[in-house]
Image (cartoon, rainbow, N blue to C red; front, side, top):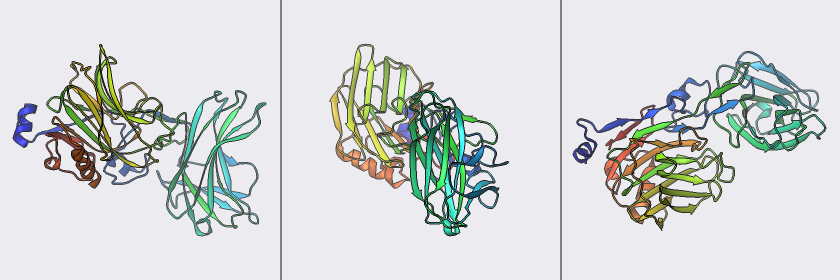
Length: 414
């Protein structure tokens, strides 16, 4: 296996390839800094996300509590605390006071929001003492102007002694609203002294909650992630397969913009081979296109936030196939084969577009052979186990990337 792969790749020595990244991916190395990101540690995955801006200018309370205020009724105290935190070195601490009320705080993140704009708000919460077990609610509010104040979206959960993230997505539905707010509240008649910690507050012009971007007095942005790998020797437009194991960063019914891409090999928009999620039909789609036309095959799928999904695309000169979670391949005839000169392909995005997978990639494998339905089931089992080996994969495997511990290589690592 090693000798054959080295010959195909024109290399000597260990047949490893280093992936090219933009530096804006969420990795175990960036997670270890504890400043921002998805809040995970030692996750053995790479988050490939579109560019984003946190409009909540004091999301981490690193310096003060500026911009946060008591929202509507309810009695509570609110201070900056360094006794605990999810990101950085501080958090906000809400304490219910005044004879059994409920604590609520809010942050105005945008003035004169555009009518029809979609915003997502998110925040990390944790409780101590009698706050544990209380209900907490995150709200997106539109306020002011001639339009009535209104809750545009909300998310509720029970506060525990561990940090958890709440997120809510809504649409500004009146042109004359003057402000949009992120509001967080311990609901009901929580007892005096009930404490809720908050950190990592984020508001973004997006239909999904992206990993937290640290803010401390101003908005802050994260640029787009991009992961590329050399394609020579891995497969051809006529013959091959790709398999990806991912943790989804969104619900299939609340898709990010565009059509999130698993892999994309192209010269231009009319000459390409790709695997993506079609957000209109809620289907995984393998597409092959040349100037003469497009061939495609799709399979419907539903998944929850943070669900682990395995998707396999396979093709030959006459057909395209797709399998989800080891299921039977769905096939379709496709004879539009491009001649691709591009020496690299993209994993998880199309450069310069919004069509990022917006999820965590755990494993990515390639091959140049054929795959049966049994092979699809076997690949799914191997990738689900978390530490597959090249030698275990069927279908003449040519590449295996496991995103673990900040080392991202493609090649014969089995």
